[in-house]
Image 1 (cartoon, rainbow, N blue to C red):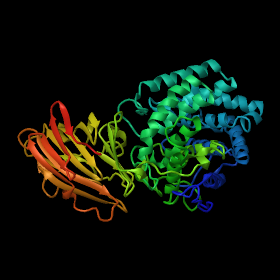
Image 2 (cartoon, rainbow, N blue to C red; image 1 turned 180 degrees about the horizontal axis):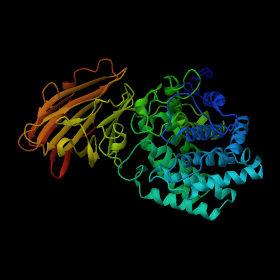
Image 3 (cartoon, one colour; image 1 turned 180 degrees about the vertical axis):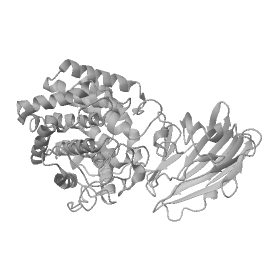
Length: 565
């Protein structure tokens, strides 16, 4: 992909300006055009993979998701091509929107694009095309969504149809119904789960926040924008910490092939004025993510987004991932709705949180602990509150980072017997430099875990209960990729192979861990000392003299003393 030369005067971190975002959008749109059907209603990208929804739905996905990119780019020539495709699509080419069907997802992208470009696209269509398009979209108002972020697709379609006066009462009911449903998944501090349970991941930013905030903004509904915009603003304080200094988003959660869609909530905060971030911080984080992927093979030699993370990678795909799925990355171009003279484009880039100082940050709602180090720009997420066994390993591991990928061999896990499963995760709290949880492990054993973090160092504590005496227990650490190193050192109850056995009663296992991109980090054992004080009790002394006392029992986890600075 050809981009303008870097501009280090206004963008000292990445060199990227608005011109780079425009050029990237133009290149992506140009590359997909040759894969449109003759009537432009479907976009069939090459490859032998088909989603579980089938080829026709996949072709609609290609149309809808690239239309969204054209809408953010405000590309009049491209929009005319998509107008032709719309006319053909609603004349019988596109599949109907039915209960829990993929066309419901794509209808939301089409409706949002039409709402954003109404004067240049919708208003120029023939009356007959508009009537057929509204009727096709209208099925989204009554189609049953899956009980998760899908509840917001009828909201998005309803917002557009209400604006053009099509079935306004049904549209309002769909909007109200969807917004009511997501309330049951709102936790606190700007965090939603993606449906029932504790499914915390990036959907929180570019689905659970994106659709209601955009709807409130486009409807000029001050009350709704105060509610949803306020939640977004609070969420961005945490969200900004999920990006490494190299621009990498946290490698956690499903649908990772959407890549720089992770930047959408950053732009959304600037667009609506609901953000704690400065304009320079917003652009620095967003441009960092775009550059990260473009420089690592996200776009192939044909100019197409591949199914993967860097380049093609089937490990990050789900059954619903089709050839056009990566084009939900279009959401990352939301910032192009901001005019060129907006401060988010003109202010000098500023460093993100990981680049400013070492930090160990408590996220109460998901029960996560974020651990970041300025020297190497790495962010680590200690997961003691997110679970979705459908998409393991991207939800249930003990830790994730911006420089590692979950391993099929179960990194960051506790094996009880030969079983690394981690289900029924029960958050036990998060505080100053620590986080704790309890989960069900192999054979029904319960494992109570605490992680203490400082700098790049972790103390991992696990109390195993309910396992038969002599049951083998093994701990695993980070699965390291290029440019980083990992250490895992046994301390209590483990041998050099990080293995031990349970005794008669609850058994304590402790290890030191470290993930770092530092070239010579020094001996791990010199950073912290651990002393077992009794059953389920220990004292941790950091190298600066701070002490932390940990006690694990049937009531939970108790941590007292000095935390991370």
